[in-house]
Amino acid sequence: MSRAERLLDLIEEFRRRRRAVSGRDLAQVMGVSIRTLYRDIASLRALGADIEGEAGVGYVLRSGFLLPPVMFTAEEVDALVLGALWVADKGDALLAEAARKAMARLTAVMPIELVDRVEAQYVVVGQSEHSDQETINMATVRQTIHREHKLLINYCDAKGVSSGRVIWPFMLIYFNGGRLISAWCELRNSIRHFRTDRIDSLLEISSRYPSRRHALIKLWREAETCANLDK
Amino acid sequence: MSRAERLLDLIEEFRRRRRAVSGRDLAQVMGVSIRTLYRDIASLRALGADIEGEAGVGYVLRSGFLLPPVMFTAEEVDALVLGALWVADKGDALLAEAARKAMARLTAVMPIELVDRVEAQYVVVGQSEHSDQETINMATVRQTIHREHKLLINYCDAKGVSSGRVIWPFMLIYFNGGRLISAWCELRNSIRHFRTDRIDSLLEISSRYPSRRHALIKLWREAETCANLDK
DNA sequence: ATGACTACTGCCATTTTTTGACACTCATCT
DNA sequence: AGATGAGTGTCAAAAAATGGCAGTAGTCAT
Image (spheres, rainbow over the protein chains, first blue to last red):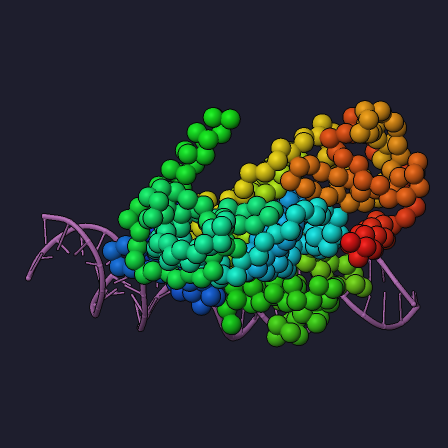
């Protein structure tokens, strides 16, 4: 086994492990001495790999490095393209832009034949009802969801009456016609949905909501399942 | 410069060039002799790179090999997830499956933090009208489109009357409620749309249609633009 | 504080690999 | 036929890699 091959195998081993792994373990797997293993790590670092090592803990490969190519089938490419087209059309402005960028990134690492498939533009999203555009910054909403923070919104209901609400947002629902924020509402003491185009303004509260996001999602899914069974 | 580093630089050079490049050029760029360059090529091939070399022409890296990681932002991941969810829900059965598989492939090469983002399942596609499921094999339709072949379909119109049609399919349109094939229809001598759930059966004709697919798409887009301007 | 477990570096003799130069073969295109 | 290229084997010299050893330093549990 050449050294180059061994270095690539070592990267693969890091990727397989995911958790911290000791130098001794790696040396054994690779069939080399611990001294050589340390040198291999140093070489990979010199090549740009972000490998973190902590005494008493072990090594972990922090971010992606020299990946095998993702070999999509043509149909998988079609699916990604179609999905991105839908998000670009029906998502909020920031997410729409993100979809375009994501496809550009993927296209950049594809072989030519698959690039041709992307550029053929033969899968299309059909036209549908007008999508109501919100004025709020959806990136703030996403961030608030991920930090599990409370959100203060100025909400305008169907009758045009504005009210301030403190909510715990945990999910976003995308329709052809617009977007909803699913949240626990402190005013109503239950899960409520808020149309993003009816939110005049919002403010992230730097206070973590007492329930966990995944638990609220689970609660929501159970309520949806009951609602569907009732039909 | 270590040899491992040089091999990686050589891969990068191949990726940069895209066209065939001679061994002599590469040797000069890498600062090594032509003999060493040949050995480096052999080493890369041993590592799995698909490098094609032709006397009088030069070298070309055929397919992807050891790519830099695709560094998606969190929002780009959200966009891909949401798109895949839509296709999984509203696409034909094969394309839905392809969406799931594509996301699995992408997830496998993502850093942990982004995998967490995928698994959070906090972006959701809202429920909408029932999607009419076709019985035909949509992979055959896609293949026919790409080969620019004619397609024989047994079509059932809105009144329930069946008729055989020879069409030149060039595009697929996906709605929440179903799918359409856009095609030039030999019977009507113009572009028509066919609901996939009304096609009883189909047969690819191994005969290339006389127009080019991209020209038909262009024609279709121009007609759609005129239709939109008339509103 | 101590011990176990770990990452890390320098040094050295020995082994292994790599290099460039040279000579040669073969394929494709004009 | 000639030009342009890919490709392989051999060799002496140079460079790189290896494992063992000795040492430094950090984290965690007792």
